[in-house]
Length: 496
Image (tube, rainbow, N blue to C red):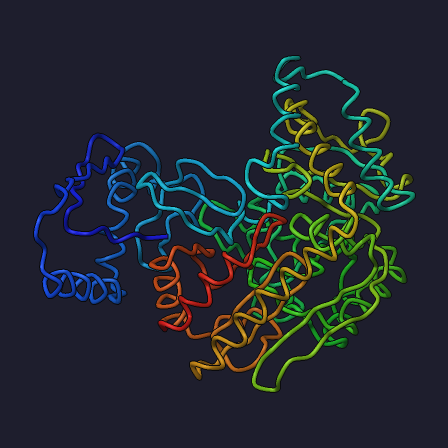
């Protein structure tokens, strides 16, 4: 939340911290009512401004740190979206986080709906996770050898999808990269299908865009990726028609399909029941491996994710009103998890049916490894997070109710303002598109009103609310969010 202090307050910048020294007015000192009223009106008038300059002024310590970072870190950031370039505002620098809030280096509290891009599901620095990490650190930070927590963690994951076994990695990118390698090794075929708008990490084979025809090989979407590296990847539109899918499987020897079963990296775009079931059918009939990328949705939308729940339950709102999209989902051959299962520490896992996963070295012919894979700190954090979730009766019911509360705040707020939006939610995550109809694919997502999103982002920031600084990212809700966070959001929308 951004505070405007009375004129008796003096701010002094000392290094990277802001010190506030209060000048006391002696008891009985005269101060006319008219003068006090004028000063109050002046503060109210200032608080109504929503310019980029004001945001920069309020976060001047973050702005200074960003300028310093650019001298030592490429573009000043270790991941592009942190630059806030899509909202044309300098990024905030976080000092600490607790519960549903972060505190910036400027000393400003913000209700956080980024939640480390979905990696935080209980809340920042949640007590049970923090305590377990302290205990784990007493025994060492990294072994590079086998330890009991690897078994304990894998047992929890396997219990969520019976018949699946898992191997740990250090990130979602590694998990997806490894899953695709296993699919190719198991089928002894080369071609992988992915879909526009679905993100599977920054491995070369995933940095692709559709070629000149719908059922043709992809071209690189990033400099530094030779065309040869994407020559075995086909990128199709999300929710592709049946005839396109059939043509692709007929034309090529497909090793596997990797799919964000509920996309979050272009915003939450509802998958069509027909689309998912057709992919499942084609993979079965062509002996291809169907991989659900649940790095984001795994253990967030439900215990074990969509792969375990075998159901998608979206609530949407647009110019046609509010409605539900609910349908059963077939089980995949393989799955990738990440984000929430690590409780905020680096982690990824990939898993599948035993006969598929046993192709991995050392017993099998597909090589995969990692020095820090399954490290004791990440697994301790993950185990504590998953045990805390399972110990709370109705955890996902509660999380869904919180998400729906946020859904209603957004729906009612924008409806009152007469601003066309479409809103999509699943348990623990939500997306707002500044367009009148819910998008069906990435091309439609890109046709949203990006100027309106930038304005919305800045109004929220001014009112102490932080959402992803990109119109193409889902928001995330944690177990620690409360009505207070949603009230700040409601107030901000009223100022649009």
